[in-house]
Image (cartoon, rainbow, N blue to C red; front, side, top):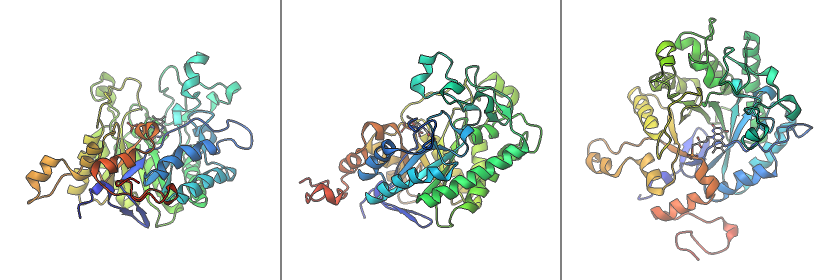
Length: 401
Ligand code: FNR
């Protein structure tokens, strides 16, 4: 039929998404930093995630949620290291389900970028963003693959021992079990932006000499072990996503010429391993692992990389789905990403069909600005989507009341 692919349902394992528009995980730095509610989601999060779900985003993903207390970016992060934190996630899950959406959660460990204050406190305190103990920080308990600071204004991490690595893998699996108990539909692992998982794969941040550093196989080992442990901890029918830093945008730097850096080629090599490990969708982000990255954010700035990875996966016969994210703000842009460009469709329809760049799109800031963006896109593309029934008997969105 003529429904654009963007609005066709997408089934991953046992979960059917109503369309291919997901809300990207976004830290809100709005949880309690101490007391029994530490790290728990609040009514704020319920509205933040519930609103776009009500207005048609088929999946909304809870912000980076720390699997250990020292894996928080800031004292005000969401966490799931304790059973007490299950209730807050369950409240959000119940709300999102009540309006017909699906809920994901991004499990994360901030690694060497931990113990910073929420962005809006950073400059006020004038301490380069480090959260000191008096504001709930833990500058002496920040860990990473190696004792290499992200920048001079961040904490100096302690090199993780193998015991730390084992415990962290277990913490990821335990947090995933709690998320399942809370009723989430999707788990996403935060393998991007220079946080712990991402810092392990790059030779700029990982200079270990044991089996977790050095060669490509060694640098990805911790990630592979976390993926395996989480896949085993969740039901077989539950989708598992992985967010990657597809390039750390350091290729041109002298440092990378000397030490190497994580790039698209290695991302493709890594991506080809993921489907057999039980990952269903690769969420293609970039950057964040080095202060000297050369990044130029603009419309679709990461979408081409998603397309490149998707093509390589197809050529290799790998069934991993690909998600595109980053400055996707317009209806036609969104449609083209999952359907292929109009010219490509015209030119290749008879032989190969269009060339999509991704199977789904993730929207961050546009859904903050405009939680009903999905309805606007539907309207622009001429798709009839149902208003929530409770909004009245006004019929379909397209036809108006
Ligand atoms: C983010 N981003 C982000 N990414 C992630 O993987 N985990 C997170 O918790 C956050 N937190 C976060 C907070 C805020 C306020 C913003 C704006 C962004 C990145 C986000 O998911 C997305 O990848 C980027 O914002 C690019 O997409 P948009 O915003 O251009 O659609």
